[in-house]
Length: 190
Image 1 (cartoon, rainbow, N blue to C red):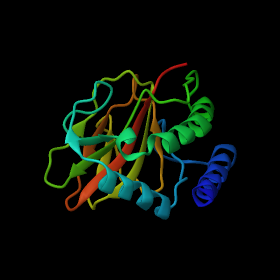
Image 2 (cartoon, rainbow, N blue to C red):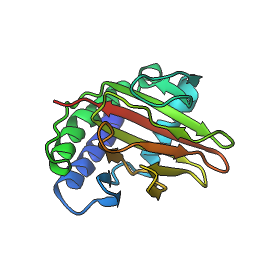
Image 3 (cartoon, rainbow, N blue to C red):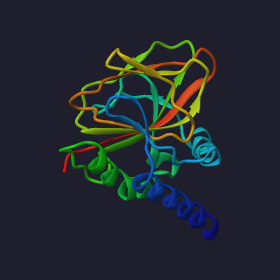
Image 4 (cartoon, rainbow, N blue to C red):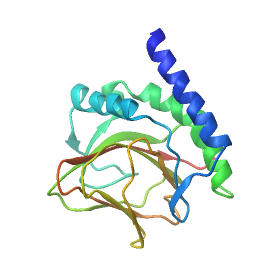
């Protein structure tokens, strides 16, 4: 529709500005947080996950063990996420990670949910050279722990980008209340 095209054009402009200008937040070494998506955009994506699909406990061979997950294809988000990936991820990786080149199409993309009261979830060794997270819901107490050293809580709208295969393992600490919901994607080396 024309309305949805207008929304994506607005996000595309924010993406271009994020790549070409200004410093990015960098809470840990080689972990970058460009603020691209608005709270309204993240709420729309979150609603799509909660109302169109079904959460299941699947083990992803390129991802994480035991959290609830949902393929983006199930909820009609794969096309929009693919557009974002092709337009943004290769140029971002090229600028920020020396020697890395990625394809714009992820090898795997899904929604992931951790509820309060569950155990922390560690990343598994995967095939993706770069991992991208887009948090959609962040309950109080949620933390990302990189290599057992760097700890931070992302904000809604921040896209978390890090080199997952070689140097960065992440542990997801679930919230004390509510839940943590994110889109996660893995990108291969070009």
